[in-house]
Image 1 (cartoon, protein in one colour):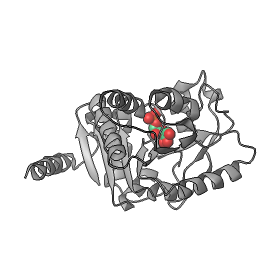
Image 2 (image 1 turned 90 degrees about the horizontal axis):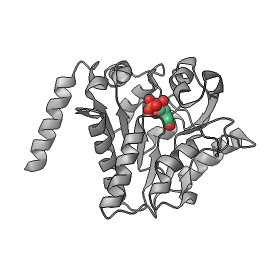
Image 3 (image 1 turned 180 degrees about the horizontal axis):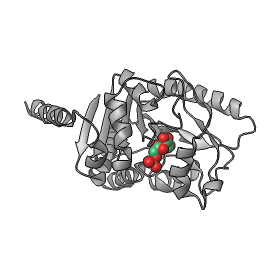
Image 4 (image 1 turned 180 degrees about the vertical axis):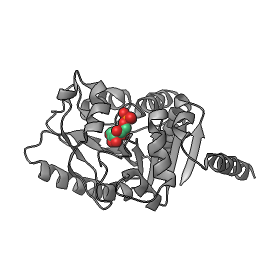
Length: 260
Ligand code: F6R
């Protein structure tokens, strides 16, 4: 796992946006896996800025979002479809029909989950998956205890996740109790993974994901099984890692080798 410790959230956003832009530049027909929540907003803002300042096109890109709340229609102000349209898609040249977010109010939720998996497969799989992390170590909405082999399905949200996400709603009662989410097995099939985390509230989860045992109790620890993960954190989110000095040294050595 490559661990990049940045000075602050703005530097995390810049790093993430550059990674996504480089992916699209090297493969214009990339399939991107995208995340919602507070953490990626800065990265999307920076990606939009890059889009306006360098020659890059998303016209042939397909995107798959990690999750969507069950019961929320696409037009709902708190739906992840709406979040993505407003924070990214409507600012770049991606055709909306190439952007996929699970349909939270589908007639058959099970059918929607199967169709989502099939769509990812039929488009060749995800090249780069962007992830955030929950304060309990969840990735997408794979809550603690999720099978490490899980596929896209409906998952009940923990009280902690609903409390964390209540800031996007008028009250906690309005936060849906379940979501459609890509599974851990689905995420691990991505060719590369970029996890971003900022703030002291993520420090314990990050330390456990990187330095703790592999366990379904901490879904992000499953990333230890993946050969191509980059984890980008700010100082506050890095604070719980015991080997932070080594990770900083590794990055310095990596930069030195790139100069040769
Ligand atoms: C969102 C998602 C979640 C978030 C996580 C962190 O699509 O999959 O796993 O990444 O809950 O959320 P923030 O960034 O709001 O702290």
